[in-house]
Length: 296
Image 1 (cartoon, one colour):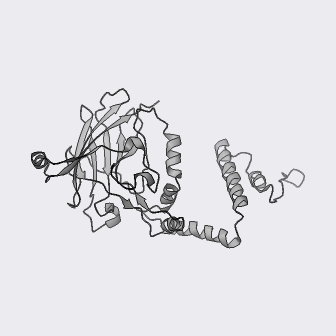
Image 2 (cartoon, rainbow, N blue to C red):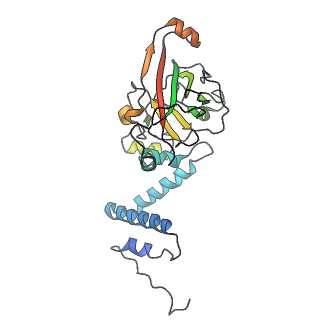
Image 3 (tube, one colour):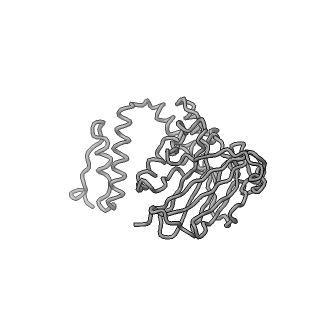
């Protein structure tokens, strides 16, 4: 390209900074990439103009992002944690999972899901460390008309009673503690034994935790059990059951609580029922249906 045919770009100035940057996007860039990049530049430049950071403040922001990257590992994703506590993960999920009111709502996946578990028998006790208050979960997978969905696969995971996932305490917790994978039967039912979930702090020893402290926010997640429900012909649901008596329901640090996901936990004092479950009385029981939306 010679000087006479070279494209002319606007020079950079404060008033038109975003326009100057976006003008450099090449003519052959696909439209969606152009749309995303242009929007990010516009909003980023608008934020900088509103904040008017000093050089020291901007360097601190860059160092924060650098330290966030350094904190990532094979089992810990600090950038997911950052997205979670800023509410972005929940917003992206809400935009991508607009469902009929009767369908089960999604919530946040979190950074501690482990794929590839083998199927367990219904009724399996997934608590392998013996800690916590016994809980039995009975559930049903149905479509939006209430018809049972058989053969659905359900991944389940939660923290132990000390507030840690097994992958956070390798060599301390039994491998696969409080994780399970189940299949719904002909009536769409599945059930398992576990322990009542408790609230716990997200990992707050890294840059995201320090950020929460500076913002005057606590790191606690409301007590919950994770679920992923998959069935052919239906949208996959990534969701939780929340304990209704948790003190952090209204201020879950990652904004994951939805009214429809607060479970109906019953405190059961029945020695015979407990003995049949391999529990001691009292124990907890919860029943929760999962309603799947068919694929378009």
